Length: 466
Image 1 (cartoon, helix red, strand yellow):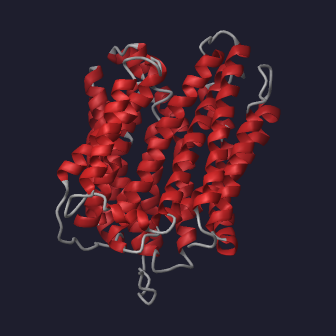
Image 2 (cartoon, one colour):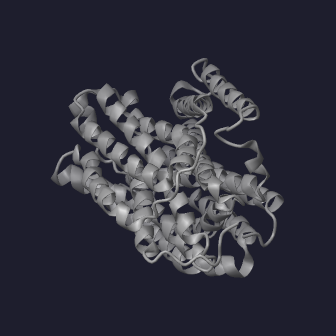
Image 3 (tube, helix red, strand yellow):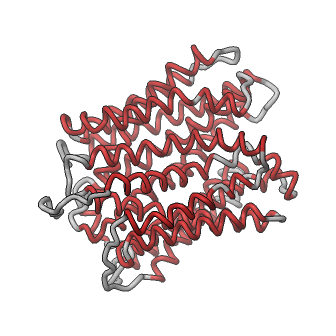
């Protein structure tokens, strides 16, 4: 249990700024490359199919290594792993910007993903170390951390456009280097050192789960291109699932497992992680296809489409910071998670009615704001519930699990909804009506995932848990 009598860390809000910056950069690195991809293709000689792996290499390394990052945070100290992650991210960013061949670019992106896999669970562990003993401040701290994610996603679109237009595509990677150096300089002064503790790293378990998650995500993100029923998809997916099953079996037999099976007996841990997974599986496709609708159907440029997402981003940040903590204190997490996911589903159902000759004000703005309300209500309480493990020594593991749930949900949802959109006409880039029909089908599929998340939250979460 947390020590409620412990004096508060005097620089905890400054430390939270560094922690939120970590979330901002980790999410920004998934979106900042979008506008730069055409220039990267011509400069490095990527094939049209290979270009998507500039995104996928980051996601696969990030999702596959999160559990190891969480375990290392518990054993070595979160600040040390946090700083190491920034150093690795800077090295990967430097390599990606200096790349002169596709293989070097993908290697740089994978190293970036590995750095983020160390940063993300360590950041959440640091947040819980600083604010876990202060229940009155914890919801606000988690809200500020959560609000950094949509800010990073939108900022990535803006910065990617500005940097590509006025500098060069290399700077979408190199921008991380001075940020990392600043964080490394500030971290010792403002972040708690944390104590390393004795224990062994289950390297076999880490290799098994990393390989399993990486192969599974690889199969999922490649499936829309190769075909879900293709012999290039199912054997790979089966191999990934077998590796994950082997990891689960291995954990039950290890003296010091990477993921102690008993952690799943923590109240509401499974339900909160399932909510995060389904939320991401719905939210990321909505964001992706909404951006495509704005550009390919309504004809907005990359910068203008980023501006069109600002009202939704602003609403999310405002509600997460101002409203969500108050509602959690009054009603508890369960009603907010279920209500938020239901509102997210309703917003995406509304978006599915978008027209080929529509407008931003009528077809996008009101529905996207409703979806933003839903995301704001559900994200903070589900994240806080997933982190509320009884043993603070397992905070890094809980952080790794919830980050893994969100990233795997993102990859699964985006891959599945991409297949749905393509099957419903989104392959024809010259026909706005066909594109809109495909995007509408993807919005409906994402709405179904969010609604499933709302129903499972009602069934699996206990009332008034903290």
